[in-house]
Image 1 (tube, rainbow, N blue to C red):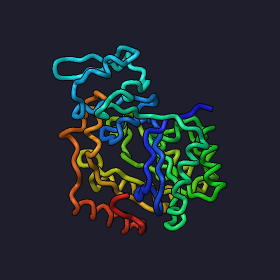
Image 2 (tube, rainbow, N blue to C red):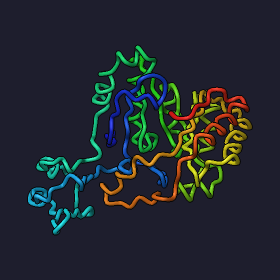
Image 3 (tube, rainbow, N blue to C red):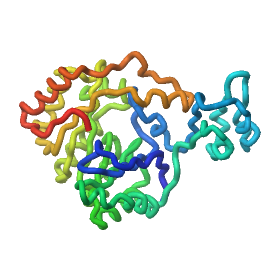
Length: 305
C-alpha cells in the first residue's frame, strides 16, 4: 500500500460539508484548472516552496543542500528543481522559515489519530472529516478505502471532495463508507472543459450519473468564474443535466472565484496564468444564478461553501 502525500490538514473547516470538519488535502490532480488556488496540490511528489520575501540571502541553504541544487546570485537564491529531491535539509537550516516542504507521508492510523483530535467538535456541530486535494480519488485506493472504512466504523461523517475525473471503480470501493460526495461541475461543454481544465468532462458527467444511480448523497459545487462559466446559459445547462438525469442533489454550492492562492505560484517557481484573465462575478449575478437553481426545485442552493 502506497502512502499518498498530504499537503495540508485543515482544522475547523466550515466550507467542506456539514458542521465543523477536518479537511485532509492530498497531492496529485488529473486536472490543471487555470484558477487552481492550491498549485502545490497539482503534482503527486512532495515539493519545496520558497518564500522569497523572507529570504535574507544568508546562503546557509546553499552550503547545506546535499544535492547541490541551490545557488546564490547577487539578489536571489536560485533553486534547480530538476536536481532538488525535496529532502528538507535546507528547511531545517533556514533561520527565517523561508523554505517549506509541501507534502508529507502519513499512515492511515496517523491520519485517523489526527482527525480524532477534534471529535468533540464533530459531535457538537454534526461535522466530521472531508478528504480533498488535489484529487483524493486518484490516490492509492487501498489506502483511501481503509481510511474511509476506519473513520466510518468509528462513527465519523466522511465527505469526499472530488472533481470526478477518476475510474468509477474507485468511487464504488468507498461508497459504503461515504456520507456525501462534494462533486464539482466546472463546465458542460467538453471543449471549454478541456481548454480550462486540461481534460474533457465525459468521464466526470458519467461518474456523476453512476453515483446517483448507486444511491450516493451528492452536493454539487460550481466554481463560478467570469470568463469561464458565469453566465445564464451555463447555469441552465447544469440545471437541465441534473433534471434530465434525475440527479438527487443534497445541496448546490455556487463558489465565487477568488485569487487568494495566486501568491503560491511564485513559491513553486511557476507562472500564474490566470492573472488579469479571470474575474469574480458581482453579487447581483451570483444571486441571479442562485435564484435560477431555486426556481427549478433546487431549494438548498447557497452562495459559498
